[in-house]
Image 1 (tube, helix red, strand yellow):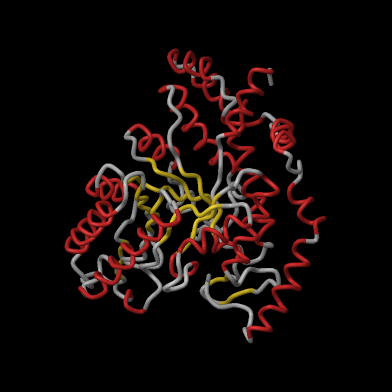
Image 2 (cartoon, helix red, strand yellow; image 1 turned 120 degrees about the vertical axis):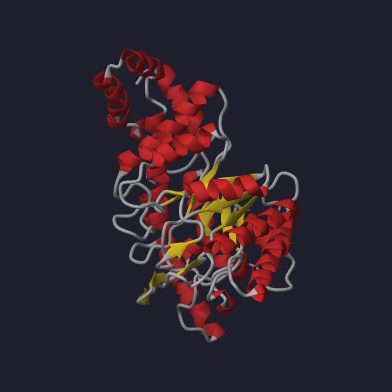
Length: 399
């Protein structure tokens, strides 16, 4: 690695910030059961404290995505939450309305055949926008569980049109500077059809919504074999890529830490982004966010693993020799072109990432520093006692 390349990577890492999810620090499980960790967060303050610990150890996670139903008390000033975040050295990031948990959404939210359910979802989302305005958030992130389980259960086109109308209303209610991120998922929880099943549907909905709507790509929300970097490149060229949810998967669900299954796939995504920046001379505005809820691994350590993997794979993508790659592509030299990517991917960038961390005054090995700090042991003791004092059992929802 040349000195010029090192400076290029260091500069790129300076601009690579990753948002953490508040719900990723709480007790979670599968649809069959929940597995408890004594140190898991069960209050908003505990979630923000854990997020602050990750940022303290990485200098790369200054914001926290929040769920409105889980992280804001009804009738409470949203600035209370913002102040609590600041107490732990972070700020509130993406606002995530919850239009899937209430019993009213059994048949859908914006797509429901029940007008009352559709109105409830819209009202809640409009309230979420007001919360976002109050805390200075610039992102409204929408994931829907809407879909059907059986052929003929509902009118698919009617559902599409109602969803378009809802997103248009939501978009137009946002303040200037806020972006609507529309997420997609091919299946789960619906068994027959999902109303936003792929990136194309999300793209069309975003275009119908207005100029401040973009597509959110979850790295785990794709069918096996999907060429995700192709989707990313297409959305970048259309100026429709709004952000990512980082995670990984082997089969269907998506709560493994980034790069734990296929790190080369993540590298290829970052490569397409770096190529776009090289070609256009413009750094794209992309919201990088984590969406993981770990059942078996310690919450904070799993988040630290994701941040570490993201920084390493992002750094590798900065090392692709773009001029050499373009020359090989122009000549149709497939072997040489592919080797440009492979050479960068196989480069050990851990020393340069360590150098970046030293320059920020954070540990070179965040996980080891976290373990040596005693944070988990203190949190487990304090939180167990606090739950007992409140008369609560461990567990509950993602909240």
